[in-house]
Length: 213
Length: 213
Image (cartoon, rainbow over all chains, first blue to last red; front, top):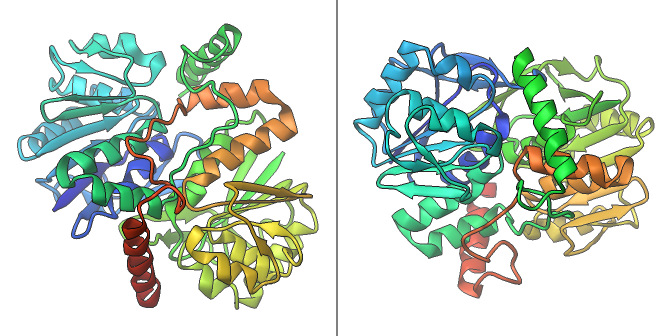
């Protein structure tokens, strides 16, 4: 089994690493990190580089394709080489997936037209502009297209994917292996749960960050 | 504010990246990834390299020190250069923290003697061998020493730390920013919740992996 995870400059590290920690625990799953230019990719914060050993030419098919998010996705939505590679891989996949604003790249590649899908809660309008129907679910399955909400949602998505492909026993074992028994000390992880002033605060900080990225 | 995150060969990526995605969102927090030898560090699976731009000589103090886990921690527990650096940083920190088997490194450095602490559920005995009292809590605070359970627990730990240092408003905003509204599709994230046969399966796979690492 082959999984390809796209990396790019200004990626959000957890979008990629959360589902990676689930998916690489599938026995026999060969996970490959791929970038347009193989090598270190600076993340959104700039403190870390994630190295993609493979370039687009090296990886021409996959059973699972995963596109993480990050402000760097905005440049990708108009990068023809990336969109061509995403379409080429998608023609070979059993599952084409995204986390956070990774769905904007799937959208720009024309793969979410008319489909329910999700993204980071601040990016619903951007997703809709690509012809998708944004939903507020944490994980959205539509045929082989699986999109997850912001950043940390990729862990839940990957576990759901393991259940679909291999059943609950393997998914349970992986969940136990990564001790995924979440106990957030607060309950403000979605705009429907957080206080309105917190939602506004995050929205304004996010808008600034995007303007500067 | 300065945060130092240790990287090393055969690190578990999510141990480092989960709390990193929380901590780098603290305004004014300068996060530095540090390794004995600066440069790319292969992770536990081998599919990914995380690059540490800084070596031990570059980083001599921090407000928060974070030690992630992974099978590579076993080599660190007898690596004097690493243990000296950990002790040196600890002498400057406000908070000294670990995720998963990162606590074994704190233990080997002599910092958890007589303290309640936690680690991955498969490593309680190893932690006890360093004089700590293993507990089954997901996050354990003892003075300035904060230890988290396996892999994914670092996200919860980092949010609790933000609450302690800056209060709930900032922690809520960060939680919303990373859309941390966990919805695991199964409830097997701790040995007390998973079926006994799943616990045994993971224990045997873990023992094999450790023997081969």
